[in-house]
Length: 111
Image (cartoon, rainbow, N blue to C red; front, side):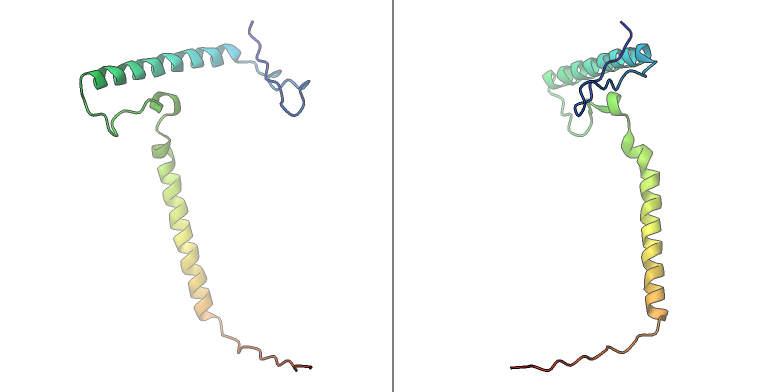
């Protein structure tokens, strides 16, 4: 009863869950998240029946996925800073490099 069986859609005889050892923990986590989601939905329904405006205040998925935007905000800021620095560096090197005259090529039109 404590085995996880995940069938590989590309190869049905391949059990992707064969090496899973913490299935009890996975099941307990899923049950806890189910309870959290159910409680969030009940709170949401109760607030709506009382006529409260819930725009932007309630997230039903927050207990399931957490605050990912807060976790990744620092990483995103580092990437934006890196991109700006790279673009600045590219611009400086482009301005410093001597410009070569355009190579003129002439073609004879053969009729």
